Length: 79
Image 1 (cartoon, one colour):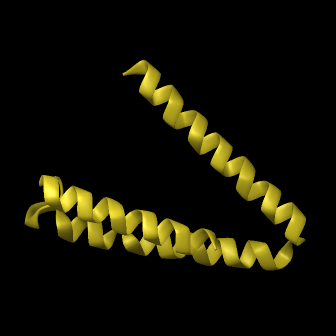
Image 2 (cartoon, one colour; image 1 turned 120 degrees about the vertical axis):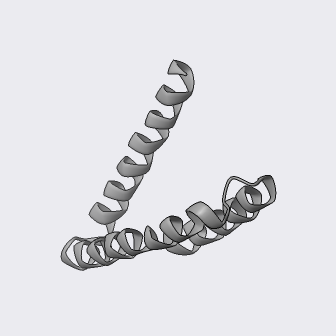
């Protein structure tokens, strides 16, 4: 579910970035190459999920998203 939500969100960002000119021919190739580490991360997460109980994995994902969100807030406040 998290992967599908991230994909949908990323696709919407792609549309927005393309329409505003942030993503263009110069940086589209590099952006496409960066899909490989993302897929690798999902593969590692899948293997980790198979080794942990569902509740423990769920809690780890929530903690990760909390840290990510707090980092976004920190960056917004310090800019």
